[in-house]
Image (cartoon, rainbow over all chains, first blue to last red; front, top):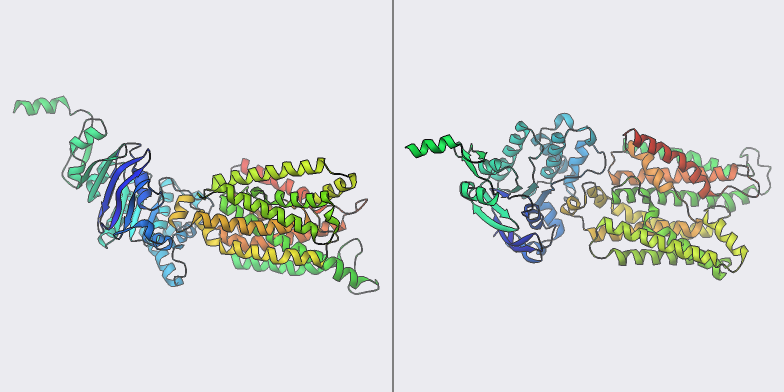
Length: 259
Length: 322
């Protein structure tokens, strides 16, 4: 196992969960509220120590990896990111370079420029964070994580406040990161995003694994209906799926029964 | 911008120091040195006082900036950890036991008090390294030391001791000698070094505790650095000058808009500006005519600090929080 969780239990939140993330892939963690998604993400980020089981990186227990190395390898975006001081976007992004103490200044600057370009922040780089809109702020915070240039990108609901275009741009950027051999792990609330863009999906409910595998399988109509406790079915073709929630229209049912 | 700002502050300091040496109850005119003991006044009275103002001011300014960065709160102040009340308790006990009259004993007692408060803080805050618990532990230590101090004052054997304690608690640099400079300087400089060393971790704290940890901050290590750095500065400051408030709260606010607002970028400007503020306040104490002695430094700073606080509150009310 290269990265993930091995039979992890956190009292009251996770119950024997294993997750095997792969490089080059986007892994989505889905589940209803209170399923333990964020807890699982912070366990594999090494921020919450499980009561039993362990987080794993590169085949070793995460606890055996030094904190400095971990911080260079794992970029983590919390669900409700905080920025305590009204720094500029550029300064905020530069905080992502903190794990690389002693790196050459040119390398640091290049990483910051890359992150700014990736999140389309050129025009905002000198703006104080307090003057940004919700979506602009989310992009700046994501750029902070990208600036670390970690091997594993962990983000808790990164699309929550992004508009369509920027959400899509972020997804393309994450896909690009995965293609370049990095691992991407996302907690996703929106099942259609997971269905269309993830390579593998882990479905959690009440701290237990309900399903895992390729999205068409792990997020099948049966799983969604059972775990989220509402009748749902997928519309469209693979890769362009949309979720229809609620009972299938009576007309359609009648129509099918007639033939 | 940061460098230019620091240079500007340093320049102001270079100008202010000689002026501060000339100002006082007896004004010294450098161009007509007819005053007989001018050199004694300068070297034995005013120079140590100026050096002490610079050292303590620099320490308190930087400690305030570090505390605000660590607690992610613009209203934090170096006094929050309860180290100052701990040191003050030590000092009060030295008055109480009568040892204060012996040389070195008052600062020694105060430093022991500060060390006790630091140890207690580290023990209570425990192994988690969480900031909220730590702040509460500081408040607890603070109120415990405050209560014991009041107890000691209320039980003082003589009214003289009580009046000495009360005057001392107001904070002052009057009649301080080179001895106090030698006590405070190495400790404060060490404390400053510790805080500068913690600068990167403080920057990471800008993103909150979880994100800071993901950036490689070890909460317990940072906590220990904060206790040590702030403790050395505040402890040695109280030991030689009594309680001096407001510098650590005010200075980081004044300099923050001139920097990029990262906690580490605030440390040096806050140190220089703190030195400048304390030097200015101390001169003010010397110059202001006051029957029966000079204005106490702690009082002068509180008088300066209250309107500043009011301005801050009014700005907050208008929704322009720094």
